[in-house]
Every structure is written in C-alpha cells, then in structure tokens.
Length: 143
Image 1 (cartoon, rainbow, N blue to C red):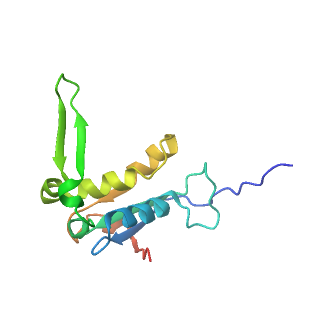
Image 2 (spheres, rainbow, N blue to C red):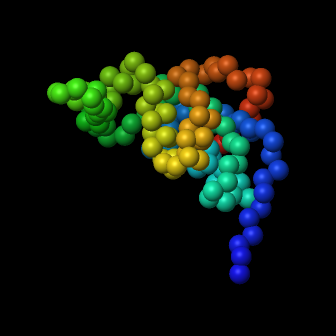
C-alpha cells in the first residue's frame, strides 16, 4: 500500500509577520519554527517545501525567564588554540537582539537540506519596521 503525497500548488513564497513583543524566547521560537516549516498547513508533509517565509519584528522586546539573562552563555570556537569565546545573554541582547531570536528559531529547524532552505526564509528585525512590504506579508497570530 502506498502513501498519497499531495503536491503543493503554491508558486511563490507566502510571507507572514510575527510580532515578538512580550513573548518568551523559547515559546516564540518553537511556534515560529513550526509556522516556517509549514506544519500549520493542512497539506503538510515532512519532506515537502511549503514555501513559507517568516518575518519577526520587535526582537528587542523578547523576554528571557528566570536568571537566564545572566546565566545563559552563548559559546563559539574560533578555530584557534584557546579560542573559546563566551558571551552572556544580557550582553548579546543589548547589542544584537535579532541574533538571539534567529539562533533560537534556527535551532528548532531540521538539520537537513530542507532546513537550510527554511533558514534562508527567516528574517528577524530588532525594531517594528522591516523592508519587506513589497512581498505583502500577512500578520500571523501564534496564540
């Protein structure tokens, strides 16, 4: 018995806007990754590209619960001996809040070729403005 896979009829990317104001970082990232992957679509299949794009605005107004601002560390290795760099979440939120949101959402996407394509369709901005009005994005409520 074979499984029926519906082919998507979408030709262009459907862009949606999410306002991150007041959201907790992990909750927003989980729901945004779900919407970006198209899992809220009735014709979702794991291996298909549903041509969804996501624009996240107001990333500077995201919340971290508990003592995560001081205890959460972002680490990366430069490739040189002794090149481990650690930065507290408070410092990253002060300088690049859109990076924190982008990394949280990217971490919840699949690590496959499809995930690579989905990551290119994620746009995050610190303030309320974005330069994608030409794509006619629609507002997405994640509640």
